Length: 169
Image (cartoon, rainbow, N blue to C red; front, side, top):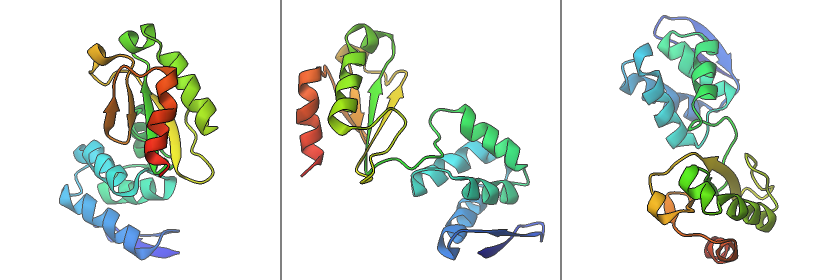
């Protein structure tokens, strides 16, 4: 349990290692502890830690002089943000109109079957997680899947095993 002192001099206690607290404070400071920069701060925090758990939201709220409810509201409103840790290799399947019409649902089902993971979950070994996206802007390559930031176009259910094999090495 560490003490965090905000720019207003108020102390709070959080259950995070000091290094993480310092990193979150640095990110908030980089944005001037400006409440108007909440989304940018959350983007940077998620990029750094991979997700935004409640303890991290507490520190962000404290630094930006916002209520925890306001920070939580933004984290839960935008689908980009997650409170659940993603796998080492996060799989995202586009379910936008073009991808859906061209079989994204079957591709998604095959990923779920092959990885033994449901949408929104992370495998017990932490290697893979699965999520859906609405559109990645690659409609001409539909259906599209991403593993991390690598885009796979014209994915068929038969091609899912090949994609997974690249990351199981």
